[in-house]
Image 1 (cartoon, one colour):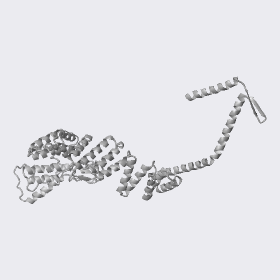
Image 2 (image 1 turned 90 degrees about the horizontal axis):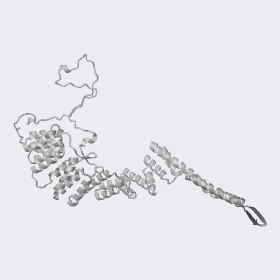
Image 3 (image 1 turned 90 degrees about the vertical axis):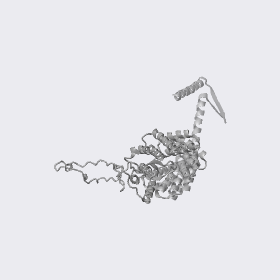
Image 4 (image 1 turned 120 degrees about the horizontal axis):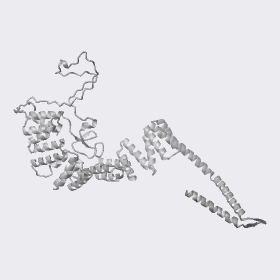
Length: 512
């Protein structure tokens, strides 16, 4: 709309100018070399305008002639660039399709038509990687690092190639250079973080994490920082307990559910005479993630307390999250130390029908401490050998007795408190269960009556899939022990051999 108004205004001004000149007629006379030209002002104006147009046209022609070599060269360069672009497109499509021959051919054509072009270098490197030509790929990536626009891409390629040939130093240098050039690049920051964690350089790891903060989500950043802080606190625990306490408290603020941070902070606060603050931290962590490490730190909140006072404290902690196995185990251990055997048995009673290894082992300790009954101890240890596993610190298929900040594969915060078999999809233990083959006929129980057999004239029906068999944990009674359900009150005859007792004692150590 504005352009239309401006156009109409311009036309009006031009028309007004012509009208003004037409209303004021005059003559123009030019005398030059015995020639005299006389004309009106209007005609002189038109002649001047025509002369200017002719001069402009002649100048355009002269300029086109002068620039014709450059234009011809530009035309051929543009044509060559188009061919190079098409060659790069064909090559990248060939790489995606797995056509090595076409990819190498297109890479050679692109390198010939567009030498030094970033996409041509990328195609050369990827086709060389596809063919297993590592030296050519590295040369292409090094060429990329000389250009600002492709430096990060070249460093990424050199990092991958260094990893493929197991050159940790070269990979680390490439990652550090990329992180220095562009800190927001996630892969470079993560690689530097992993290398420093593997070396145990927790201060350097914290610096690397701060540099890549912009590339991380806020919860992920807080969790990683909390893990690094507690790792550094554990490293300083024997040298500087005050610094370890400060780092552990900062870690708890970032991740209140991080078990090692809460347990370490609770221990250090209890040692420094702040049991109320330690209790608050441990109870908060317990409510989110009941764990034996938290229970252990909670039991030692006050140094010098009696066993009964620790038992009362553990009962309060278990009551925060009722119905949890870890709470029952913590109460049972404290009750065993206080020699409150009835309380210990009552705490474990809901789990005795299908005990885990820790439950069965703790029951064996209770039997040994209360009665010294080797028969019952052996029975519970036998059940422990056949019982389902307990959660442990697990990462990358490796089980650790304590939490570690880095997994065996170098993954930060890789250890999880879980049952090891859960990693391969086993959700519950199945002990001595034999399922019938798909094509076999189910075997009738020994107690089946003749009426239970199928009638001859009955209409045959396809066999349905048998119902899942519940796990069965057989109770193996010792020769000199009548068992838990025998109803006999008399004590069995104790064995006089001390070597057998030592053997069972060693066996129990495997399940602690």
